[in-house]
Length: 466
Image 1: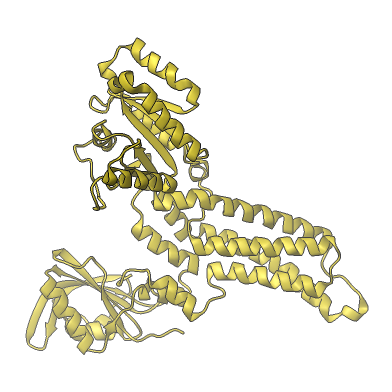
Image 2 (image 1 turned 30 degrees about the horizontal axis):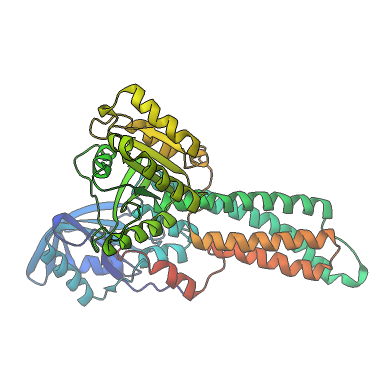
């Protein structure tokens, strides 16, 4: 599968900038680069040491395209494991295009999405889970997702899976050996030790599978639905959480009273706040559509914030209580935080009276003044409490990849089948089949077992140039 023809791509974002980096990888990468590079000291790139920098010009015949800095990396000591050069040129889009077109004429071809990392995997520089972590690292937008991607790219997850696979493989070899002496009825694998190993593998697999719930949340952000009437301070609350006068970070346009989404990071964890229409009985057709969308968004959310204005509660408390009960009854398993806003307009006794009326609802209560930024830190801590960051703090392996999660589930099922086979004295040939399948699932994670279709699906999601 390893194709060492020279590939080229822009490794920095497209568009104008201070500098741009054009990457070439392949057996003839340095030779091709040397053919268009004129060193200020007449250096031959093919004769230079690996990991060196060289100043000069990119030339197309008698035409000088740009003054550049060329980095030389000789395989196998490069990212891709192949001969690689990186051309740091000025960030003009015209210059970028001219250099890339010149390299294409000199024998390169445009790289496919993720092809540099694919070659790193095929050349043994990364295993498959580490390669996938590269994409996660590039797309990480908060501290937690960055930390998980770094841990996986350094091989934390791979090492854990490889260790389990190696131990299981040792016993599998003994079981397979027994099949060769089936007529003599001998046992090479100690059943007691094997049973202990299976229990240990099952424990680790369950821990990794359970971590996916946290990992998925950290990777994709925690969806939080904000429910409340218009003008109760939702935008002001978002500004206070963001600590700047900018309520809408990104918005999803739609019909009147559609939902609006804002994203922010609290304590290194991403939260996606979904601003929704108020929930109440209405004859207005458009408003009823908005209310229907509200319940759809609550369904998608992991946490629900119900925000109301303190002064209005004194006038229409029963209406608010009905709305809160409606949400609580329809979504009993979702954490519901009731937020009393504009407490600066009430006395302490009046705030205490509102809390007393809400106490029977058995919800989490927060009192804030979004305008004065009172109670915002307490609300942030409440939101963070819904995320189990213990594994993250302890630097444990956390699974974030759906493909890995699926393979872990299948491996666990096979390990449980093997355990059942030992307990019921099923014949070794049937046990061996389940062990092989478990080993296959482990191999799918790290890439010890792979195929073109699998690799195509994984690397198609990478950016070109990585």
